[in-house]
Amino acid sequence: MPEPSYTWAEMMAISISHEMQDGDFGSVGAASHIPAAALRLAQLTHAPNLSFFCGGSGAMNPRIQRLTESSADYRNLVTSEYHFSLDDVVDFETAMRFDFAFLGGMQIDKHGNLNMAMIGDWDKPKVRGPGTIGLIFLGGFKTSYIYTEHHSPKIFVDKVDFISGAGWLDGGDSRSKVFRPESDGPRRVFTPLGVFDFEPESKRMRLIKVHPWTSVEKIQAATGFELLIADDLHIVEAPDDHELDLLRTQVDREGVLRRYPSAA
Image 1 (cartoon, rainbow, N blue to C red):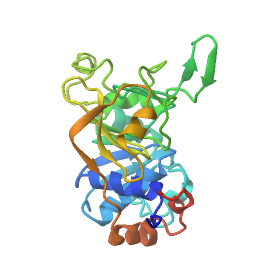
Image 2 (cartoon, rainbow, N blue to C red):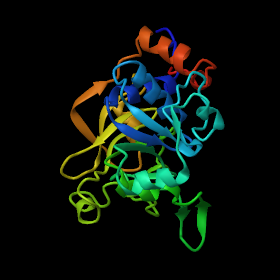
Image 3 (cartoon, rainbow, N blue to C red):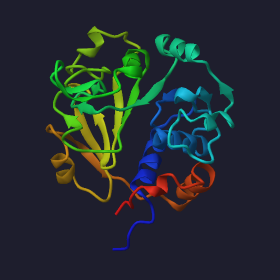
């Protein structure tokens, strides 16, 4: 079988772009160059009225052609439609103006809770993270998308050691008892191995799409809890030539995503 002519990072960006909806307004964090590429690709294809705010740079709808590895990079301002202040961003988050946000964590559990604070015992942790940072605003987004470049049992754990950002909490209706009804938990999880949602009743993570270079068995082995498997599980189709061409010539001309390993 010939080696795929795309990387898993390009595949992730295209998979994410397919999930975006025209007219939505969202946000990506600092280390979110794959989602940022996906959002720009969606604008160029099926969602021209999609808008997004780009991390700590303050850039609104940067017309990305040369993808930066951090959305906080000042170069995002050069082609942006508008520059927001940090005060504006906090106002958007607390007033529930964002339809979605892309977020991640050092740990992600079966209900989509995120941990960026510490791993291990609070008084003597094994790992210290940057802190809760923007994850605390997860109650201020209408929904969220979880994104990670790594998929292992150390990241996908049964229960996070500290909840920096609330997903579906303990599952079921536990989130609705704490947050405003307009704020849902995470909608999708994107990793190099596949795409996941959350089963509507239990709110447990469920595998819905498998990338073509892996399998359900390998994904389960890389996950620290028992995954639910969708009845209509799909194998993600390889990117078509048109999408790859747009990604490489209109979004990521310097090949940031092509520096990742091949999808093979």
